[in-house]
Length: 162
Figure (cartoon, one colour):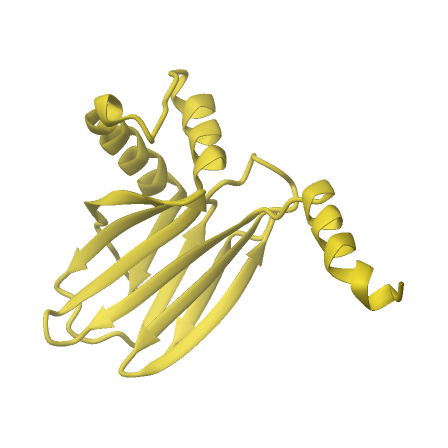
């Protein structure tokens, strides 16, 4: 057999031996509503691990009986680990909710009264502490222009200018 036939299997084995530590933060400026719409995608088990470490309480996000507890703990953790400044003013992240999709948890926030976005400062330490290879990928969309940046542990800040 050729190397090509073994390559997918080899890649899968490497992925299992070397897991990825990545979260994705999407920030979209909604001009019509004058809001920032924020979604944070994390691996569910990593999010649970960090919440448990910081709150000293057990949590299983997938259990419907723990939904209210999960809402409180997820919102508190992410508000502590993700801070935004729009045009120099600190943003108040309003928690909207979360949903689980396969092995990931999507958490949603909104920031009101952002009529125009010229500059966005981001401090992001989401899942810092799970692994020293953590990467937070941040995408910001404003007036159809999308900019992206990777924060690789321990770097935790970046700025977007439009």
